Each structure stands twice: as structure tokens, then as C-alpha cells.
Picture 1: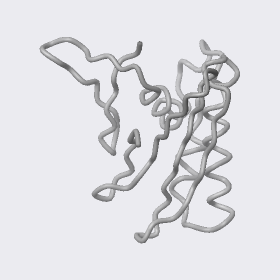
Picture 2: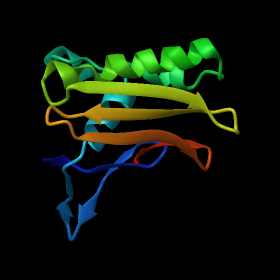
Picture 3: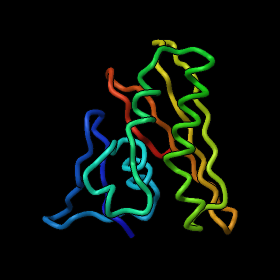
Length: 132
């Protein structure tokens, strides 16, 4: 169980319910922090360092190479899911939308075969992580 972090498009907010921190049994918070946490001071204490590689690639114009760069950066940021055994597979697909923004679909497949789809989509000129 982890804390529910709600993506607001320009940062994450901890969700509260009746004064208590809401928990979440999905990968939403883990994916969000892996992709959008950037290079932080606590990387020296962690086995799996975060970078801003994904954010840089994600904010580039839509080209075939940039879409591949986004996919590679996301896979690199999420490879710890496989390395720790919480997932058997992480697949990433980047594509453009009609507003010439990059969207991303992420499928996490657990060891038991269950798959979960997440997306980074543009809403009101902000990129937001959603469970699909």
C-alpha cells in the first residue's frame, strides 16, 4: 500500500480523506514519482536514482526520434519495477495528439499476469498521469 498522490498537471498532491492520508493500491504514485521526480538530493540514498530524462524528452516536439526517446526514457525510469520483481513487463508507447503534444501509454504486467494501463495525457495544457 502506498500514499495516493494525485497528479494535478503541475505537480502532485497528497489526497486526504477525513483528515487522513488516502492510500492507493495501484502503481499510480510509483509511476508518477519515477517519471517526474527529476534529479533529487535523496538519490544518494536510493538504489534506483531518478533523473529528468523523461521530462526533457516528453516536452520535445513530435518526431519519430523524439517519440522513441520518450519511450526509452520511460522504460529506463520504470525498469526498477522489473528489477525488484513487482512486474514482469513494462511496455511504453508514445504517440502524438491533435494538439501536437506527446501522449504516453504505459502497461505494467504483474508476475501473476494481470496488466494495468496508465496514460500521460494532455488536459487543459497540462500533462496528467491517469489510470486507464
